Length: 191
Image (cartoon, rainbow, N blue to C red):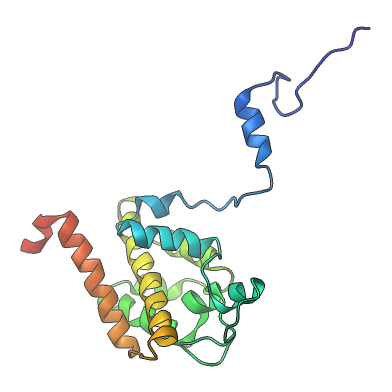
């Protein structure tokens, strides 16, 4: 029998540039479903931060240690646990307090029933599941601004040796959410 050439990366055995391109990255990139981040009602810099956070690439103490950069491994917000992306934006008691204020002020108490265990990505997905499709972009924006303001508070404490109370950080977050809403939907100012 004659030899045949069969491309094993497609179902029909035919070579395509698309299949060759895809196989180059097999196992090299995250399979997290983060497309909603890019549609969220938040500024581009905040959406990019959220994307980086969900990939666990923000420069928290654990990531600085991996790079052999000098750092204090303790969370700057609670001063107790090691600083990781998960801890900083989901598990830290300080962050939970800020999130609690936001949920109350923005009438998001339905999120009180969301299980906090697991990854930050899993928690975000469970929060999104509590809302109708038409509300998800707004909820994503709120969560992104929460993460962004927690990060800014962490950096304020790290680089400026200055700190705010949880309710003050929550208020800054709420203000940014409202400013974005006003900037993108001027009619909402009249409500």
